[in-house]
Image (tube, rainbow, N blue to C red; front, side, top):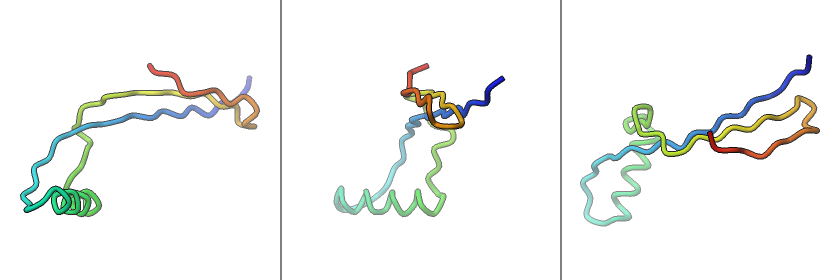
Length: 67
């Protein structure tokens, strides 16, 4: 029996509200809140799921597929 590495990737989306004077300021504030852990995407909506199967020797690399 062979061993395989399974890679799962999710794209999670959630909405947050930020008060700012400009869009650039809002983006900077949102990035700071994300990096500090104030904005967390755990409860967000999963928009995309992909999976890939790789042989442990990386010889049988398979492209991601939606699932």
